[in-house]
Image 1 (tube, one colour):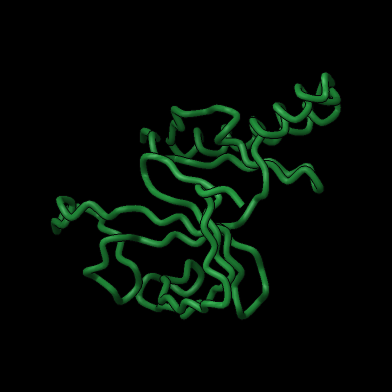
Image 2 (tube, one colour):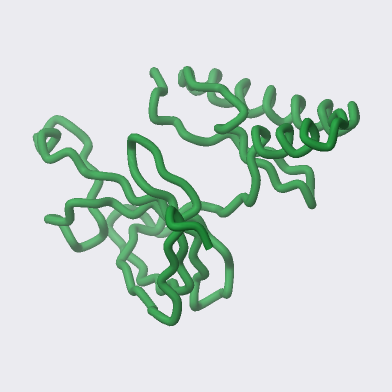
Amino acid sequence: MSSTKSRLQDQVVTVTAASPTSGSDRNVELQYADTKVIGNGSFGVVYLAKLVQTNEDVAIKKVLQDKRFKNPEILFYSNGDKKDEVYLNLILEYVPETVYRVARHYAKQRQIIPILYIKIYMYQLFRALAYIHTIGICHRDIKPQNLLLNAQTSVLKLCDFGLQRV
């Protein structure tokens, strides 16, 4: 295993998170284990973890909360009941690949991505863009690294809305 990857095995972490289905005033407890770093960037670190309750793989994006935004007129995210936490843990759907890595794999094999797959991926990307544009959001950072891909199911997901403009 490379030195840039870390793993916290056999450690169960319990967090309190807001549930999107039960409203912002109700929290749920989640337990996850078998955590390893799968990516990082200027806004935080992304971990792969397994939810203990469902055995489901999830991505946990740990982002620094900027305390300068604590103001009654500004929406401020909090990590469940831990209002003074420095980091916010976003628990997201895990998608194993990116278009960038898949394209690089094909290039190394001196092959091209089959046109059928390209059409399927582009259709999904255009639907995602059409949706966010209808709700008034401009992504501003479309690139292969921000297009997550499950090669087994051919499902593409748009991610990383850090540079979005409303």
